[in-house]
Amino acid sequence: MKHRIVDVHNHPSWHGHTMDRLVKNMDKHGIERTWLLSCETTPDELNAAPIYHGIMDPRGLSQPLWMVVEGLRRFPDRFIGGWAPDPRDRHSRARLKAAVDLHGIRVCGELKFRMRYDNQDAIAMCRFCGELGLPALFHLEAPAFRLRQECRGPQEWPEWYGGDLSVIDNMCRLCPDTVFIGHGPGFWREIGPNAERSAAVYPRGRVKPGGQAPMLMRKHGNLYADLSAASGWNSLARDFTHARRFVSEFQDRLLFGRDGFDGRLIELLEKLDISDAVMAKVLCGNAERLVPMALAETSPDISRARESVEISASARAPL
Image 1: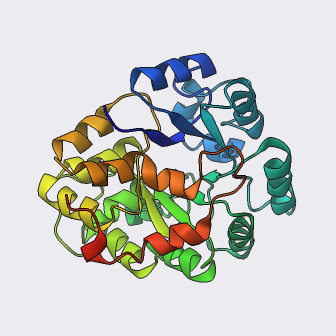
Image 2 (image 1 turned 60 degrees about the horizontal axis):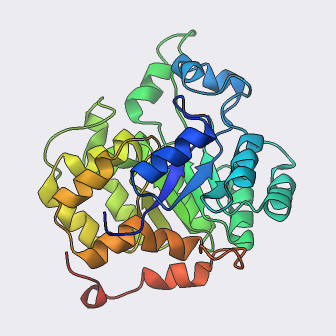
């Protein structure tokens, strides 16, 4: 791979990868830096999907801040730290500010909680992220079929995070100075229309115009998208023709990420046969613009990030 690569989505002690194994894996795939993100899902919420207990570090529930800090101290030139405290904690904003000041946290993420991200506490924290210059990366996973399952009986408690698509619209509208980064099945299954008609977590088949996720990105210049995990990969792999159009339209707001340790997203992007200029944006340029690499810069220049989405179509690089 001739392009520089920044992985905007990975975690400490994830799927058997210690910090050393993660760095070796980055070297294997030519990744220059990784956004090392926390995931502080609460014990009860984690137990809604017991599989997580087998793929996370048993020393700490989910992936707490101390694991991120450990990675930053050991490999300061390879990781950029991300932490999202639970917005329901009354001290979440004060703690986030302390993490920025003491540990150099530069991303609010991964937000992954069993709550609507547009409730008053979450909006207050997201607005604060805008003040601090932190992009907020959120996991959305609350499709209609999950919410219907919740109502089937008193023992039902299916896994869900964030709320429905209206949450994104509200966040972007109520926090105009905050850059949001969408991630997860609840976001990417909406790349095409009528997603609510399917109970598939990862819909298949051709993608027709009219998806809610692209519509929200067109409406809100502060909404970016994280291509990581099976959900991001599937959104492109299911229809190459649509994927090329999608990447072309949102080339200034798509971010390369893995949320894992394989190279399949890199391979997929290469198969799309997009131009070097667009590839450079997706693999590194957009991430570096949000969170500059230079250690002397302590916060992302959000004003430049916002300006980029106003680039006219004629000024954009061709596929």
